[in-house]
Image (tube, rainbow, N blue to C red; front, side, top):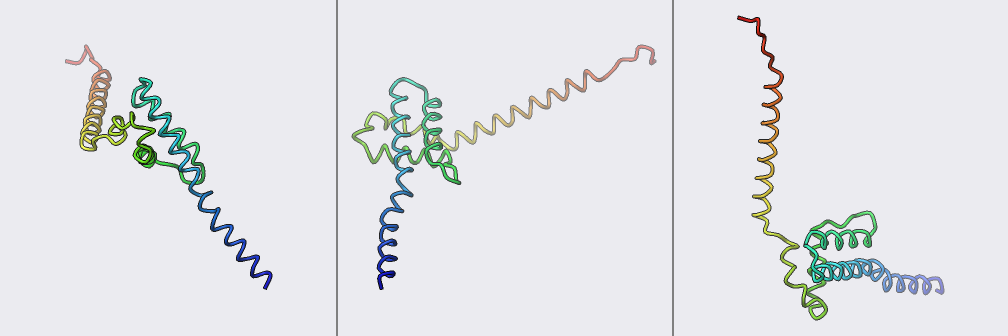
Amino acid sequence: MKGNRKVRFILLIVTIFFPSLLFAPKVIASSFGAEIFCTMRDGGNDHESSWQAAYSYIKKQKGGVFKTSPKQAAGQIIETVVRERDKFSNCVEYLDQLHPDRKLQLENNRKEKKRKQEELLQEKESKDDSEETFDRYSY
């Protein structure tokens, strides 16, 4: 009977504290990641440097086997800013840059890919031209 009580007590303690241990680092990391992002943007830094600083902090703080994707980190920053509107009221204007226009992004990727293919083709053509030799004695 006493063994049964001990098991119940241990299970009660585990169910109370385990979820907080599981989710607390994620909440703290995303909150401070949002603070890093917003502070840097308010300080006049560009989007890319602010984003990289916040994302690297969130990745480092999460730890574990699975890494945080950029999309997840952006979502965490947005959730934190929305949840704590009073604290991050000046940061709302920068949130649209965390999720850029996907159509524009796809179009830019296609243009970049096409440009690289054209460069490779030109490089190949110039290489072929330089390999041709002119035999002055061939009539």
